[in-house]
Image 1 (cartoon, rainbow, N blue to C red):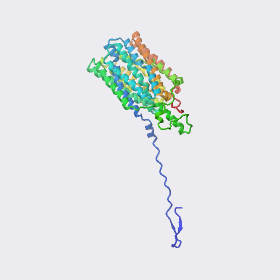
Image 2: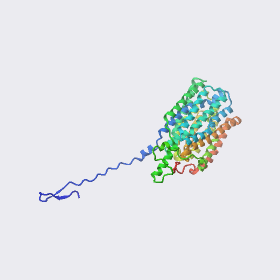
Image 3: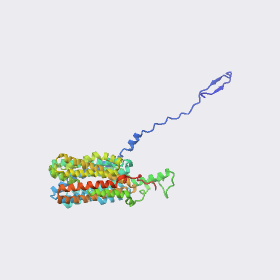
Length: 471
């Protein structure tokens, strides 16, 4: 009824119609959040990843300015042979290999990856001071080893910080954005070296001073701007509270809902080397080792291009700039591609691009076209393999061992590349530039399909998120 009828005294019982009863108003529901907006938010790269990218940018300006002149400094300024450069390049590739595992292990055990990484960055900065005074091969080799040790200490903890801050579904993209910033510094460093050598033909000391300044800025940015994330602690608390939200019984001695638990919790689940018993992890290490044995240092490719084309010495650092520029542009798209198509698949087939770079360097015809093509292929190779390896590894293992697992995978790759560089120097000396490059390209083209077979069918893709679901 829209109203009530009642009799009013003194009105001859005439019925009157009262006002309708008020009905409660139901609030109008809010429109659902647009799924595309939520998807955009989920796909954003965290600020911590960007800040770590800035740290790597400054550090790579420092390190790559030196690396870009190292082949010429050893062979021209110091008057040593290509075999000697092969030894130095092997040290560059693998001197810090074993400490990568140690750096990851310490960051996992202490749950302080930021400060372990800071030690590595600081150690590398100190070597820049030594370069100002070193004159002979023993001193240069010692400083290269120390610098690589610092790089080995910092790499796994830094990548563990990236994995902890990133959305698990966008690991490839987050690592790609970091590597893009990292490689921007790697491109600027050789460009600065080129500018110095253009203005001062023997300006080695000036390059070392610039390298020192950039390294100090990188350490400062890490210490002052990067938050002190504790990945194991966060995963442990998240798992415990998830049990409570689901109504599951608490674990014995659980205090994660007590005041101050976040500060008192001891780093999360216990560390264990059991991840090395997993079939997927072992297969990944096998594939990384085989492909690493066929990856020689970029310096050999650049020396081959210069030997064939005969361009002036001051143009040599621009080869590094070209490779790093391509890497910078393709790193984030390659990371997104790996997230969609499969990180293992992109990692393996990216090495086919490296074989193409060897072919371009070994080709009998000279010219800018083959040189540029070689640089593009090298940059694309790094874009599809470097960050993708860390993203793939971090997705395969639990948080408690993430740093160690990343360091282990990087160690296998670095040791294999160290052996490849040393061996390729001897092969170049014995057979010549062209034959050595053709042998390396042929071996890589055989290995890539074999490794692709080992990772087919998503064998290296995690079946479930690698987070602890029980305490």
